[in-house]
Every structure is written in C-alpha cells, then in structure tokens.
Image (cartoon, rainbow, N blue to C red; front, side, top):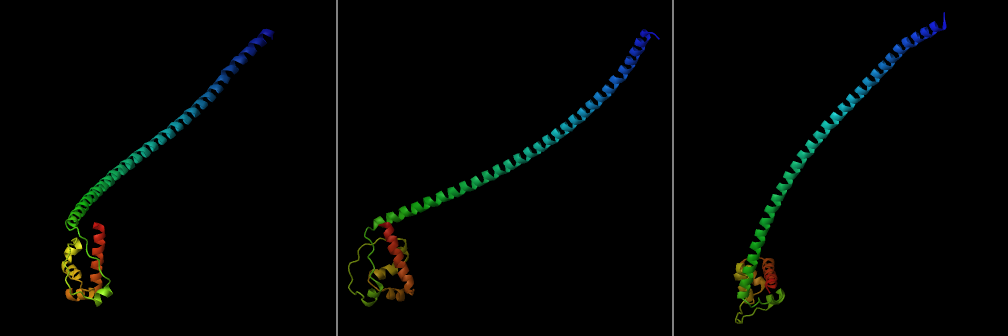
Length: 185
C-alpha cells in the first residue's frame, strides 16, 4: 500500500472517531443541561414555597395588627369615658366645696373650742352666755341638737345620755366638726 492509502485510511479513522466523540460530548451536555434544569426547577419550587410562607406570615401579622388596633381603640374609648366621668365628679365636688365655702363665709365666726371631756363632766355651766354665730357645716347641720347641747357647755356624757348615743360617737362627731372647721378656716 502506498503512503497515500495510509493517509486516506488514517483520515477515514479520524472522521469516524470524530463522529463518535461529539456525540459523547453532546450526551454529556444534555445530561448537564437536564441537571441544571432540575436544579432550577427545585430552586423555583423552594422560592415559591418561601413566597407562600411570607404571604401567610404577612397576612397573620396584618390580622394581628388590626386586632391590636381595635383593642387599642376600645381601650382608648374606655379611658376617655372614665376621664369624662372623673371630670364630672371633680366638677361636682368643686361645686359642692364652693357651696360649703360660701355657707361658711355666711357664718364667719368659728366654732367654740371644746373643753377636755373630764373637765366638762365635772363642771357644767348653768350660766348662759350669749351664743356667738358659728360656722354651720355639713356635720353641724346633721347633728344640730348635739352641737346645741355642746355649745351650752353640756358634757359629752350628758349629751350622749340625752341623745341616746354612745360617748365615743359624740366625741367622733365633735372631732369631725373640728376637722371640718379647720378646712374652712
């Protein structure tokens, strides 16, 4: 065989080999492409799942926010109602205090100071002094008889007997009157 036939034979072998080699590379490229497509599909599925989870979370948070907002509005309305009630009570108490102060100013002479209980029990004055004007407060108007007897110099025990009260009750009423007098003075 001649050199030329060897060259042609060698060329034919190379051509046949070249036909088989690209096919192997093409099948490898197809496998790589398929693997890449599978990976991308998996990535897209994961992304879609994450997206759905985020949508659910945002929905839950939005509902919680609405609920908290409604609760806050309700609490605010309750507090405003309480505030208005307290303002009304304050206005009433201020008006009552003002009325009491006006009544106290109408009777500008303070209540006589009480003698100690033990002295009042032993010494009863039978001499009637002219009675000065007194501040008439809420407690004095409720227990007018008690204060009338007290201003006459009667002892706590005598007042308690005459009005069918306990001594402690009479003393308490007198002390409350003194405290009330201090407030008005």
